Amino acid sequence: MWLLAFNAVTVLVYGYDKAIAGGRRRRVPERTLLGLALCGGMPGALLAMWTFRHKTAKPSFRNAIALGAAVQVIAAIALLALTR
Image (cartoon, rainbow, N blue to C red; front, side):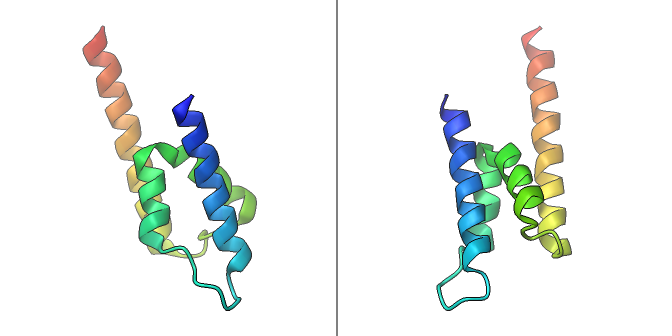
């Protein structure tokens, strides 16, 4: 349940950052966005990036998300292999 909630929060934070982009409000730091993704919110981050078209034009951010997703997939496969 916490994973679902964490991903929902991640989507909301990405959406908030996209909504205030170009305005006078202070943006959410990229470090925070990446941290949310890497701490369990990767599905939410990917969904938000796709839905809001947020941070998709920035190669360094896309690469960091791709690397984080790959690490999480490898870790999940390793965990499954160890539990068998």
